[in-house]
Image (cartoon, rainbow, N blue to C red):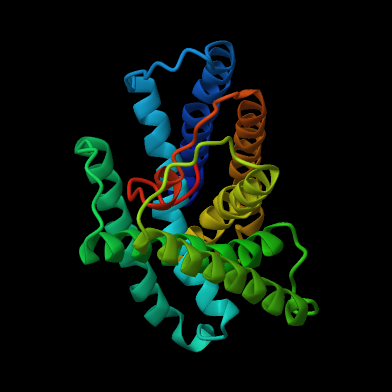
Length: 282
């Protein structure tokens, strides 16, 4: 009697289950909390993180930081023409340890509660902006590079266009990265007014590249770096990368609605620029 699932199909089945789990853990709590937070926006009370929220945070960071860290190195190395078929194994060795590092960092951030004490030491600067360099600068360029291939926009005929396009995005995020370092080195100031329209444009422009395109690109790049993706199963990975991107796109619009409904009069800008817990704008 033939088995229903062959051994060769197991990675596909397991990843399908992972996609369903990640999607449920991220999207469902986000939708319920969006309605609750919209109703209680003016309360000003802090809520303790529940088990559901803990799992939601874990899966968000797993995609954006662990998979994204590997995908950023893998994708941006190809953008800069540093990676090619002749040295892919070398870049695989370089990229995969970053996934381990970011996973340890993820667990540490969830298990060890932050002290709340602002740290402006050189070590804090190094660990905070080292993560930002990989996840936001390399990740910004890698997100455009990977997502353009997922959507079938990038192919051998159009690669001449997408390479400079991805490189420009990397440059834009590098400039933003340098500005954030300058802000970090200055004394943190608490803004007395609500964020301007320009602040919202900057925030959500970065968010759609790093988190929506980046989430899809993270799955796409991570699957290739781990040798899970090949020409025979590219369609499978393309579909699942798009599913993850759609999930983060819904989350992106929820954040926009929450930002528009919020009437908070004071914003601690240092919370966005200094925190090491999550370098991405969440």
